[in-house]
Image 1 (cartoon, rainbow, N blue to C red):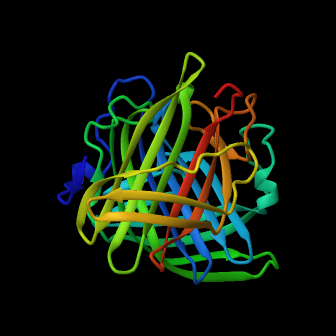
Image 2 (image 1 turned 120 degrees about the vertical axis):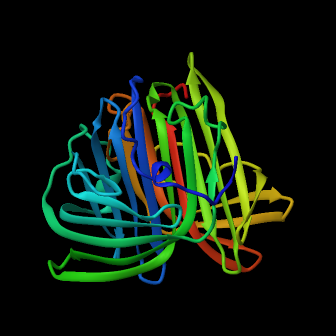
Length: 340
């Protein structure tokens, strides 16, 4: 795993020839949050493992006054220098540095209470409201390239991720049925992965990242597998940044989920490297739960064993370290079966 600074269009953009590999997929993910405007997003565009010619799109929005917009769909919209589903389009402006994200179309306005309910099925119903989003991701640090560290994972074999900023506008209809446009400019993150994605053996996944004023940042990932009814470790890696410098790091323990209820608002985690110790106090700012089946077809709610393989919480997070306040994201997912 190393700091990656050189990118080509072939690295960043979708592959031209899809490998003949069962459950092969390619995925792009972006998250970002502006604490001043109380607006942010978690976006995912990935090839459908059942038919990788089709792209599956997901847009989860955190909007002011506790509102949430959710979009899920399938499509294959050609995009020059990028990828597109039905309505979500992402374009590489400059490899390794910037991406543009556009969405125009219907979205569902939901409350957190509605999102926390156990889903009856994979289907997501209206009512729908118009949504328009135009965002620009700009990198702030080199990418963290996993190299062959993920070669034994069941969610990818090629993966890199990168800190940045997301800025732009989101136009929507608020709870009073009034048209609103909000601007966001906040810390953000992105990743790009390729490889087979079949989560039949999923055991758990924890993904945290954050940035601080002055140039410090961190990223960590910890996964678990479910093998013959036993929970076993998967990948467990972390890095720390000081400006453009990236070093390997370790951490004490990920904030694991202990049930299907909404996670506690606060947790602590300590990350250590040659740059020193980072004792982080974390506070969850917003929450959107979602669930998925073995092929990562995701749907609203917190799944039970009869509706999905795992449930997940996407949460913009405030991190405090040595008196500095930073922001990032906490993603936590667990297997739904009881013998996890």
